[in-house]
Image (cartoon, rainbow, N blue to C red; front, side, top):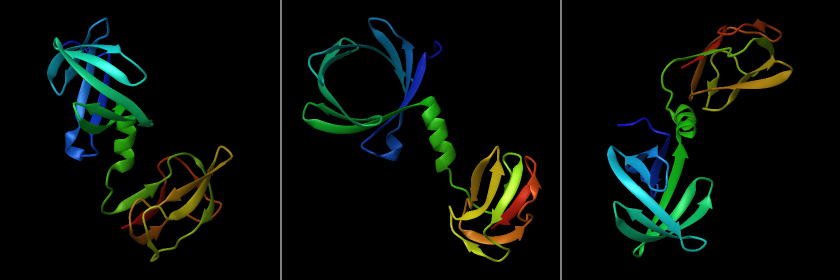
Length: 174
């Protein structure tokens, strides 16, 4: 299979198991796309603001496509209505990082050099996901370090005004 010019991921009707990987293989008058491993030749004509005639493997489909938000679309095809979300590879990677479930013991470390301005918790404190733990000042900006999990602060390695290097331990939450 040729190298993809671009890759997108689409989900249908907010159903998690309906993700489709769409690789754009050729971008000419007739597009060549690969959807979950199957290759299709696609052409389209715009017949109005939201009406498209899509020719997929020499078969015509009249659809209405309306943008309903950032990367969200409603597609009407033969009386069926689909809500489709389309994202590119970079956005998918960013979302997977922020949506991954963090479990177990977490050693919170400094992600950049700086100085501890404020410490909000002490050993034994209960915290919820997203609760502020401390403030690290780096490059004249205050960066609030938050708990990645619900749990208990087990150890605190810092005090206010401590200088931190990248990778220095700040605290442990379990």
